[in-house]
Length: 628
Image 1 (cartoon, rainbow, N blue to C red):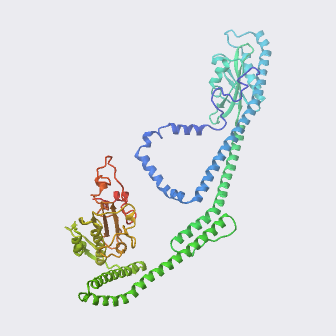
Image 2 (image 1 turned 60 degrees about the vertical axis):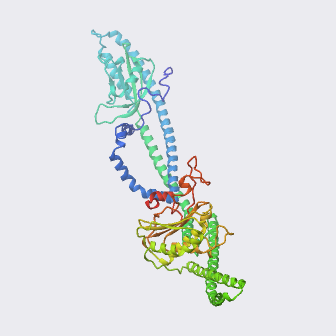
Image 3 (image 1 turned 180 degrees about the vertical axis):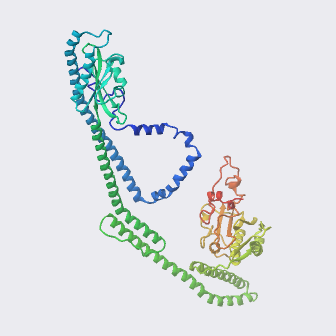
């Protein structure tokens, strides 16, 4: 076989591509599944598939939630998947190497055996040729009975040396089965089904040996087929006529060896993957457990349990982390305690001073009233001093009252006396009380939206105090322009908005307008004798009701303060029936800072002040109360 290129290449396939070691039925089934109609587009888009996917996804939601929250699970699963990938890759490589080694050794031994068999067949044909020449051919042109018997004996003699290691098959050359040399085979092999047709064509057109992989099919129906290597060559019978001689070498032993290797690798790989998963779980547990402990202690610290500490064992990095965490918690507890003590002392100081000042203030007030009533008997300078003394004492009394109210809010002692009230009556009382100041300023106060009742459960005294602060501030800073008080109710909320067209608020001032003793212009005098605590107290009153007090403003375009209260006490607010930014603002009208139309239609963003997220655009889009 030195001159046969096909036989010298053990990896080449003559009939079917690839090597048939192992059963190919599973691959063909999966290929049929993916090539079939089951996964076509029409089935994927059907309601049945969507319903099945919904049923499958529902139990997976807790698993996905656990996956997002558990870092230990993520690390272990990732380790298992990566280990499984590595084991599969190594398994494929090892199985491929073992399979190639087994097949190469089998091919070399089979080629050697087949070469010897072809030589024996040629030698026996030459020896029997002389006998056939003396007898002569049969009268009808068919092979003589001796040649037919010779071929049967040849198959029996060649297969007897294999002892089940191989089978011998003879086929007529050119597919001619009408002559006396019909197919012959040993071991009950079906010659036509066991030898590939492509290999027979190659043997007919070539004088050398060729090989291919096939499956041995037996004539008995109950006997399963076997993978095999077939090597064939065209030789001559004693009459010199060509025929095809094949050697079929079963690969069952190699298949068993490969199956044993696969099973061993699968068992070892599974053991390695499980072992790596357990190791990853143990290692990650040592890291995750202190982290979980720190997270739990941090949550308890945020809940006010400042005495919580981590348990520290060892001297590794985790122990150092625990020590640092404990030191941080200790310092936080110390600082918070100091701040609480300082705040408590401050509140107590304000309360004590406010109370202690009332006694001398009462005495001073009585003396000032006496002097004020007798001012007509004084000279003009002394009379004016008596008037200034009375005015400043009034302001001093207001400041003391506000300080006492602030101290009650700080101490958490403020109580809400809620009852159903009509906000229209409260607004009218506030407007009536502010009319003298509005006349002096040349301002007209208008009330809008008082046609329908606006009823809510609230403390009338506190609501009236809030609105009085808002209206008085609007008149004082309105620069003689009109002030509009708007009422509205929708859903579970009621609102009162006070709009002025005065100096407005600069960017950044809206976030500070409710601070204590803060003034937009420090050089601006308070004509009404304010204390600087009005809006702070108003904000606390709104929070006590569970409502919102928010501010909006633009420089030179005025400002608007909005009070939103729930209709029912303790009911959470989801929106306000009045937008915080009025419709007549420059941004809504598409004007720039100078009052000129914007050419590009751009609008400036304003900064709403008050409860975070109350006027968020996304929330307003969801809540119908936030739109008019």
